[in-house]
Image 1 (cartoon, rainbow, N blue to C red):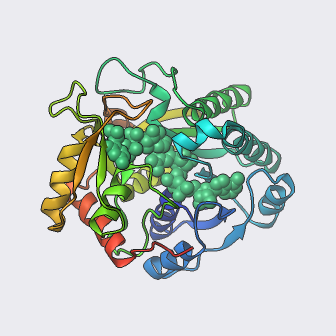
Image 2: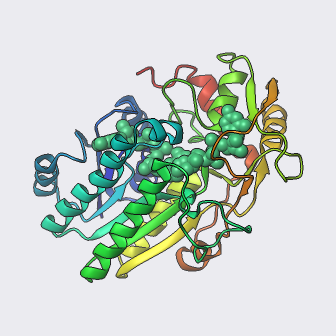
Image 3: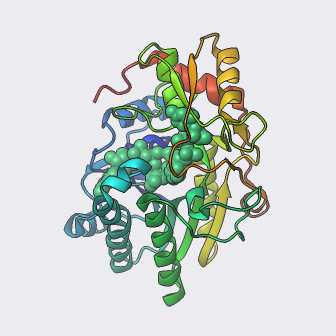
Length: 338
Ligand code: NAD
Ligand code: WQD
């Protein structure tokens, strides 16, 4: 297969390219570098020993997309490009709808014109809103999203379902990720957030490396075992392997397939802090603070469908996620130094 990877220089996209190349597929990375660095692909090349062709550009640029589909024999698309900061989406909703919804619309139109109908889309467990019971399976209701980011993912899911219903040539996987963390075991690629991290793990590693004083634990009074929020953290390499399975799966069937990608097990914030200290030997000072607006108490997946249909399970342990996140952070204290 020749796979166009939008958002290919980003955190998850770069890990997906490693798995695609290791499995013998051809790739073309497309990214406008608004939240990533070209350096990530040079690191991917070090890992895989293969060149990664790259086009710098925006998914909303119709003429660029048609050039890409004309010049390369793309057979499938993994679509990671998008904006992902929940808080920022509340302040800049137009940008989020433009990039995430309009950007995917432009991509789907270009695919349609080029006769490329296989698409794997980065969705999120956020589409489930505030579910009433755990674990969450794919039949659980979606909706009730609490911010424009989450709503943009839901809108794209619905749009792609309508597109597939209108034309049976489409074959689409909607992958609902739980909480991706960790880094490639080489320590060469990983998550490189710009500014203050929004997500727990990059914040923890930046505290441990001495860049930030202490972690604010958002809420100590949730109805969970220790009062802090519980999430299903999944190693980014397991997630990348899930994408590989999904793109191979949709090559053999039509319509829309929806999969949760998670481990099926939740950990609290304090469990993460304790495990991180144990694995790395570093202290993570923290303070319990008020809850963060829009957060839910707990969220973990039922990953049974992905196991059954894709033959995929998340194999890497919490300890491995934390050790790999730490290796990346400590070897690259300033990330890719964009
Ligand atoms: P990331 O920011 O590292 O990667 C996204 C990439 O898209 C970046 O390299 C960015 O430069 C690029 N991009 C943004 N707008 C673009 C545009 N208009 N044209 C071209 N490129 C553009 O984020 P990530 O964590 O790798 O996330 C990848 C995808 O997975 C996103 O769609 C995100 O919403 C989704 N997702 C992420 C998480 C998570 O916690 N990381 C969870 C669920 C879903
Ligand atoms: C995890 C836990 C926080 C930071 C978000 C998006 C979701 C998906 C993944 C894209 C929660 C707590 C966090 C901190 C903390 N992204 N926390 N101190 O909120 O589960 O999911 O990222 O699709 O859509 O909403 O992830 O890493 O921000 O938080 O105490 O400094 O850590 O309250 O319980 P979240 P997270």
